[in-house]
Image (tube, one colour):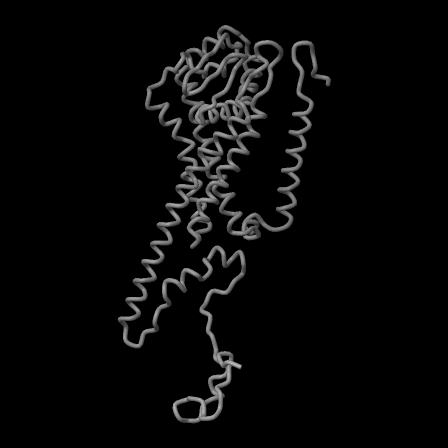
Length: 337
């Protein structure tokens, strides 16, 4: 309330929600650290949960790194515009230091704007404006040096291949998520890996949507009332692009992993069968129905063969080949009443 003025006002709901989220995350991390050391916290979760979280973290890391790189390249390409804004403002030594701190504070917003640009929806810097890969329409910009990284023309000033690379980043992030999912929890059920990969995409889109909601908002009345990306568009597009790429990659990598395991089991069976006195190897079907190492850790199952014992095998033994004596019906579960 103290920061409210006729020209600008802080959003009280966003401030309260952001404070609650920060307190919730900090309290959760502290409680988790008190429960177990950081190295052991992952073992408390199931293999499927670890796989989805690892894939989501990998996809977010790729997108955020690509957004930071795109922001740095855009500033480096338009460094002359950056210098012109500084000369126009002429802030002095103290003003330049404060302006630098303000730009550092807005860098996370710029990275999320770059991620929204790579996803496709883009972002707005004022009413009736848009900066997207398909085209940019910008009006007069505020005299803020960080805005010098915005596209200068309708289609930007960079080479054409750079736009293709930026648009491929969400699919690369999905591919990384799919590989991490299979590395964390390979499964013999081939349709399970694509489902986990798509769940990574949904969670990635949800996180980016929340970040986009906090990275935008009105900067006053009138033209600057619409600034930043659209949260629901970023959520929908990120979930589909990252989720589909992660699902396809996870399915292919898991199929290759299972196929390689089957081939290795078949080779072991042939080698053991060729050794004199060697123990016969189990069949592929019995091996593939056994729990995988990741599932075994999560479900605490034993890893071994099941031996079936016929408890009535000696009841009908008369010393003549182990058959039942004449006139007596063989005992056991297979005998008919």
